[in-house]
Length: 144
Image (cartoon, rainbow, N blue to C red; front, side, top):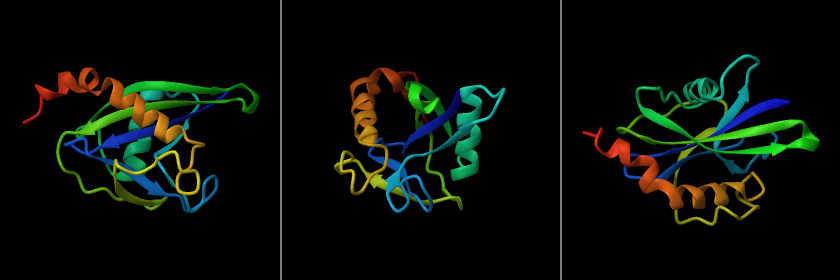
């Protein structure tokens, strides 16, 4: 079963989410989260940090990723691991796979005419909102 990851990257203040405009299918022309394939023999978290660096130039030193949830698609023989993190500091993002931008969180991420993922982005944001105090509480003491 092929593994993929999706990366939810929030800015330090947790009021913006890193998005991309897809330049190819699936979801060409729609906004989506960054992510990619988990290579054979690679752990999910290692793949998440690798994809993050490749697609955005954000390194392990800039963010702590937390494994939030998984989606398993039995009939498509694949699964998706969802990771979330908050930047420790402002970081210049760059990549050439898609057009990267910071999105305000007041958007309707369930709007399928604007966002890829069949509404999953909205669902994942709601899940982060439900657990963000607990999820990032250990990081609050580490921030400078």
